[in-house]
Amino acid sequence: MLVRVAVSAPNDLAARAGVAVAAAGGNTVDAMIAAAVMTMVTEPGMVSLSAGGYITVSVPGEQPVTIDGGVEMPGRDRPESWFGGAVREVHSGYGGGVTMTVGHGSVATPGALAALDLLHARSGRLGWPDLLEPAAAALRSGFPLGRSARHYLEFVHETAFGWQPDSHAALHGPSGRLIGPDELVRIPALVDSLEVLASHGAEAFYRGALADLIVADMDANGGLLGARDLAEYEAVLRPALGSEHGRWQLATNPAPAVGGVTLTAMLSLLAGRPTGDWTAADVAHLVAVQEAVLSYRIHHFEAAPDRVQAAQALLQMVDRRDLAAMSSPSTAHVSVAGDDGVACAVTVSAGYGSGLMTPGTGIWQNNCLGEPELNRGGLHSLRPGTRLLSNMAPSVATRGDGAVLAIGSPGADRISTALAQVLAGHMHGRQALDEAIAHPRAHVRVGPDATVVDAEADLDLGNLELPVRTFPAQAMYFGGVGAAWWEPDTGLHAAADPRRAGAIRISALA
Image (cartoon, rainbow, N blue to C red):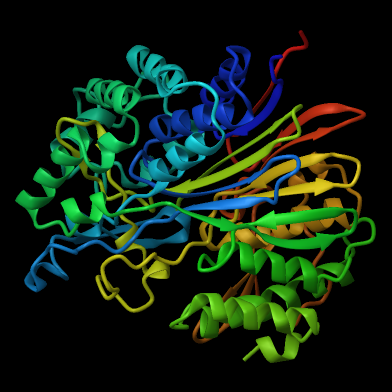
């Protein structure tokens, strides 16, 4: 029997790929993999095949699990003299002003493809050729730059993505300008790479032909990513972090990642609020919760030598509702739910992008080593093989009547605050999910000198004591929540955030 799915994805190509694979006999997991790969090849600047990623999945009769495909610190087979080199700083006006580090030395060991491969081995039905064909077809014909990718690349297409010839050629026309809205991105080498992956699976990326091309380029240009880093990378299967919220059981990304732990803490401390529409008092409590949790995260969790123990300490304080004790670019997300009761959520990130496209592959490399918020100790300060910090929090939820939900968001450190507000509005306040996603948001920025509340202009903040930085309504800064769900009475549903150019698709009735 064919499985029908609901898909929420960053663009319509990805949403359609998920539905098409289900219609061809794939299951919910297959649909998610197809949509995720399509996203990774058609959102340049936002994400790529060299991303890190996390997948949370719920299957009826099984405990929810998270597959950790987070990026790692490379350098296992590099001399000490290479550490700290092969990078350049780029300053951008994106997001109000961002300084990023790009170049060969900014590339971390990617894990997203390994995570998808592990999920496929556990739960997939179709073969890799079937799962990758929609993405290969889109690349053969060319694809337009999506709204979110274009918005980002308008700031960095020359400075971050124009310094290397292959990267520059993929995004620019003959005159040297960024490809226009009516033009298509064409990357023939990336088609070839997908065909290699279709034939040999993720093994080709970590130990085969694609790995050889990546390592040769790193060898020639001082990059830390080497053959041992790729060959020894392993995706890790972990029990998802569970918590109860009203009628829902939530499962999300556990430690050592920080995003799911932060989300769980915030939802628990919201203590059932709001009970209906968000009031000014509810928002004030939300701000207090965010300030407490994010302060603890920055000052204790992220700096801890053992982030699993630090997460346990945080959640113990949450159980006591002890706020006082705690107060001392880019990503892409796909959510898929099926009428088989399976829910899958995957979040992937290539950082801001290194600007490096490995010659002969068409694959842009990540710059996760160049994201300061993921490397608190400084550039190349971690021991090779160490997982970097991650804000990603792909989540699934189940309800006693059999309903399932997949949800997540891009948005760096706004991921957990965006999801907490959406889930609280839906699970506590009983807002419809599309209403909860569209509702105005706030995010607390905890800095070394001051704490500031970032808020959309149409959110009623009441009389907060903290300074406020106001954003336009539905600003891209506050993430891009995507949700897909199935209910036994009403069937399949999906919702995408109006803040980003998300797309939804639902399988047609047979």
